Amino acid sequence: MTEQRDETGFSTRAIHLGIDPDPLTGAIAPPVFQTSTFLQDAVAQPRNGYEYARCANPTRDLLQRQVAGLEGGRHAFSVASGLAAEDLVLRAALRPGGHVVTGSDAYGGTFRLLEQVWGPWGISTSSTELGDPATLDAHLADLGEGVLVWVETPSNPFLQVVDLAACAEVCRRHGAVLVVDNTFASPYLQRPLSLGAHVVVHSATKYLAGHSDSVTGVVVVDDDELAQRIGFLQNAAGAVSGPMDAWLTIRGLKTLAVRMDRHCANAQVLAEWLVGHPAVSAVHYPGLPDHPGHEVAARQMSAFGGVVSFQLRGGRGSALAVAEATEVFLLAESLGGVESLVVHPGEMTHASVKGTPRAVPDDMLRLSVGIEDVEDLQADLDRALSTH
Ligand SMILES: *Cc1c(COP(=O)(O)O)cnc(C)c1O
Image (cartoon, rainbow, N blue to C red):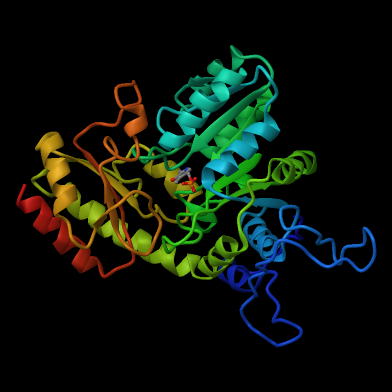
C-alpha cells in the first residue's frame, strides 16, 4: 500500500489519515470489511482492485495507510502477528546464505525465529554490541554481502538503547539492511525511517492496538523495490491480518498519542520510585539519568516509553513472589495495553533462551506500565514489595 506523505500533526493523522466518513451513510467510524471475496463487474474486472481478501482488503488497506503515514514511510504491510511481520521481512530482504546481526537482547521469539526457523535454511546469526558504532563497524567488516542488522530499541527486557542514526550510517557504509523493531517505542516516540533505517517492524499487538484485544503485525518500508517484494510475499505466503484485527488496530491508533503520554508519565514516576526502594537492586529505564542509553534516548525519542524492568535484592524467590502478589499489575505476558502487566521474563517471555548466554537474570521483573492512576500502581507495587 502506498501513501502520500502528510504533514499534519501526529494525533491529527492518527485520527483522520485515510478515514473519510462513509459516502453512503455518513458513518464516522470506518466499516469492517468482513468479507473474503468481492463482486466483479465482468470477467477479471474487479472493482477498485479488490478481488480476494488475502490479496487486498479495504480495512487492512486503511490500517496500512495509517501506519505508513505515522512512521513516515511510503509502504506498509499488515500481517497476522509481530512475528509474521518479522518473518516477512527476513524472507524479503535475505537471500540463501544470508546473515543476520542482532544485539545481545531482543524479543525472545526473534531469536527463536532466526535460529530455529531460519537457521536450518542457511541463514546464520551473530550478536554484537549494537550500541557502539565502532564495534558494529568492525563486526560488519568481517562479514560479506547479504547482511541484515536487526535492532530493537529500547530492547526487551533490559531497555538498552541503540543510536539509530549512528547505526544506520555504519549499515549504509557496509551495504547492510537495517531493520528496527519499533514495538516498544511506537511511531509516536520514535521514527526509525527518518533516522536512516530501511525497515520498521511492529508487533501491533502491543502499543498500536493498545487494548490487549488483538494480535497483528506491520512492516513499513520506504524503498519501492523492497516494498514490491514484501507485497508479493504478503499475498504469496499469505499470513495477512484479518479485518477485525486490522480494525481494532485502527481504533487503537486514534488514541496512541494520549495513551503513550500517560504510559510514559506513569513509567517515569514508578522507575524513579523503584530506584529508592530497599527491596530493589537495579532499575532499567531509559528515562533515568544514569541509564547508559539515557542521552541517546533523549535525542531520538520524544519520551522514554512505558516498560520498566527491575531486579530484586531477594533474588529469584522474591521476584516470583512479587509477580504473584501484585493485584493491579496483572501477571500476564505481553505489553503495551492500557492495563498494567508484570512478567518474570526468565520464566515467561524469555523462557526459550533459558540456560543460554542470553538468559535473563532470574531476579528480574518487567513491568508494562498501564494508564491507570499512578498512585494505585505505586501502592500495588509497594504492597507486593514490602511483603517479600
Ligand atoms: C510481542 C513482540 C513481538 C512479537 O509480536 P507478536 O504480535 O506477539 O507476534 C516482537 N517484538 C517485540 C519487541 C515484541 O514485544
